[in-house]
Image 1 (cartoon, rainbow, N blue to C red):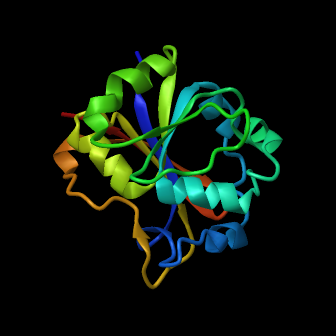
Image 2: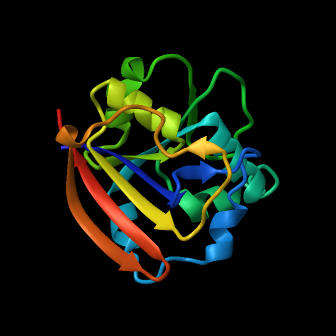
Length: 184
């Protein structure tokens, strides 16, 4: 069964990006050691992001000028971007721009995943929309040893402990990696 997983990194005080939408703070910490991201990614059939995350990736990786890098990063997986604007797409990348409510697109996204999982890359608001639609199954958070003064929140919605079950808590270098199952 296709699961929807929100997998992201956060500062220890709950921000996934600075007020300027920068992730430079995250790369200053370095990569988490021993994370088996390859196994996680092998189970992903489709990617979903909001426009801010998508635009950051486009710019940071220079994907419009180097569209071949899209496949290096994400392979042939279909990607969906929730946006209210027309955005550029790297040539040859399977990217669909979506407008409106998450619930109106769930069947299409799950079908595109081909029986594998859906990765909500970011941001937190989009993950909260999946929760509101009853479609968020798991949250994986890599907590970095950084505090930010503000920015994009990890998860800007109420989600109480009666709906979350801690599946695992692991140390990966300087990061604490937490996995929660989301219940009804």
